[in-house]
Image (cartoon, rainbow, N blue to C red; front, side, top):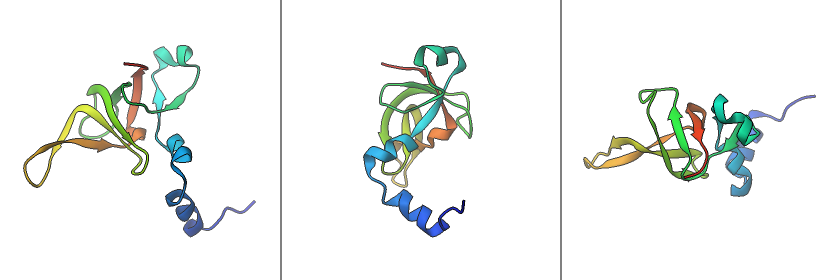
Length: 105
């Protein structure tokens, strides 16, 4: 079976409705709580506690402040970047670089 062209796949991704994009903002669940959750990966929600496993902020933990379905990123408490104006702002992180360590507030 042949896949659609890359152009069509890209268009499908960018024109996807938000309720379907929610599944694209999923992160893996830590092994110790996987049985209680019942799934290997779940969509991120505000308040989940996560650990960064890749990148400059590897090893840091914090609660999810906000999830952007439009941009496909999550913002984690305590991980910031400096804007051009010199303000501290939450840094957008890809969900693939996060592991959920606690579900709920």
